[in-house]
Amino acid sequence: MKTCSNLIINLALLCWIFLNPGKVISVESNQGPFLVLNNPVNAGFGAIFSSVLSTLHIYDVGNYAGLKIDLNSGIYVDPQHGPNWWNYFFEPIHLGDEKAPQQIFSDHEVSYLINAGFVIPRPRAFELIQKYVHLKPPIQTKIDQFINHEFKHFFIIGIHHRGTDKKLEAPLVSYETILRHLRWWLAKLKKDTPVKIFVATDDQNFLDYLCHLYPGQVCYNKFVRSKDETPLHYNDHLFTGNYQKGEEAILDCLLLSKCQLLLFPAASAFSMASLKFNPDLIAIPLAGN
Picture (cartoon, rainbow, N blue to C red):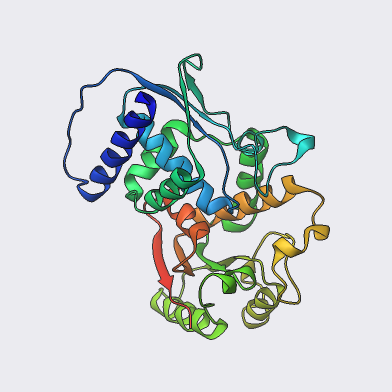
């Protein structure tokens, strides 16, 4: 099919652009299909957001009839809030002529898009976010309120620690490793620098650990966390619904992007998404043990 051929050509173009970020090429072609990104893979916010960025990049550099982000399956779909979970938290991305022939990305293509999104340079990702990705007002209000209450006038060190489900995918970053890096950076700052530590984690024990070591300096959202090392995706009963899962993930991800420095597990798609929202954020990836 012609639409499939066009998609393959532009996926190859996307790969070429990532590998040659300093070069610009032009491609003459007829208008391509109307692109539709569904949510066929069972992944978390970081991975799916990576696929959204890749799709936006393909659309932005190509010649397509339009684009729709239609995330109608996965762990965040909540029937009480509608069929497309992207629209719960972000303004709809629905561009161009939907009457044109549609090209819906397959599971295999979405996996490709996820991986490709990880290597989009942060300035380019931020450009795409500024152009196409806009928060719904209630989510933006919660972000602003937290920043005004906790971040203002402080140097914020963000820490992302996945302590339960991450061990199923990659070696855990130990408490000791995180603490060693945190102490190094705290010592590096000027002595009179007011500092707070923002923590995004699924592990209540890790949060308690840091709060004990740095009383009064740790800030965090009062979100659902695992207290017994059981992965949160096995604890659906702790959430009021899938909307809550998505909102808590997105709020923590965006607040990490508002920090000045981020310590994060190197294998985390969630942290990588935070970095895309702020190309100036100092990023310190930590390897698991």
